[in-house]
Amino acid sequence: MLIQLNGLNILTDPTWSERASPVRFAGPRRWVAPGIAFEELPPLDVVLESHNHYDHLDAGTVRRLAGTHPQASWIVPLGLASFVQKRGARPSAVVELDWWGDWKAESLRIAATPAQHFSSRGFGDRGDTLWCGFALTGANGQRVYFAGDTGYHPEFGTIGERYGPFDVALMPIGAYEPRWFMRYLHMNPEEAVAAFRGLKARVMVPIHWGTFKLTDEAMDEPPIRARAAWDAAGLPPGGYRQLAHGETLTL
Image 1 (cartoon, rainbow, N blue to C red):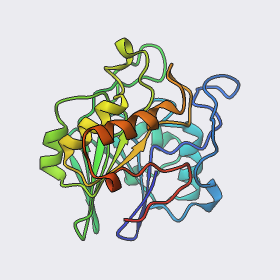
Image 2: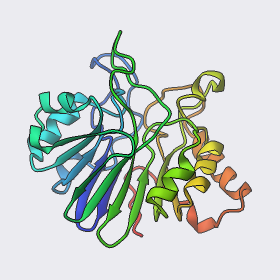
Image 3: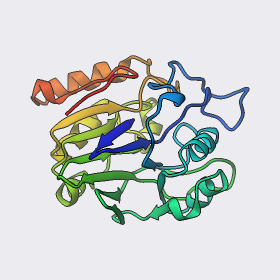
């Protein structure tokens, strides 16, 4: 996502590569182009990286962003600073956060929030770096929650109490089948709606679906189920804002 808040341009887990993979000739290939062409990005102020999986932390994209937008700050969970620094990010512009830790700029506060997931980019490094979501608070009180990659966990209510109420919550709804395995890593659409209710946010924008084929469910199933779960929960119809790739929502 490209978030524009208080005049700042903020990217979440950016990936412009064709594959989510350590190699160019294999691995999950994009089903759709990026929502905005790399060359059309506005000047970036902040890049958020929630964890180190290949579909979220793309080495080629990090190099391109660091070279084209050297002024941007990089906010990452514990252990990931060296990754982005080695690919061109200025050391002074990289901030590592633990869960519940925060970083403040003149018109923005960013806090790292708990998530239920894991980290790994190869053999033998599982859990060496942290994973997280992010809560953003603008100078005028606007609040945005980006869940990152996560299974359903009991801390959503606490996140809402500490950093909410959120104007918009970016909630992952895809990559959830088979459930016996993926339930610990990714929420399904029904759990995403339940987590949203725990956050006490105003608007839900579903993310983490329709770009890479990672799991067993059909590519178009997550938003269908998420909309049905939203309606079944009796939530306001206008609060669910499903975006097409490249679509803009103004709040």
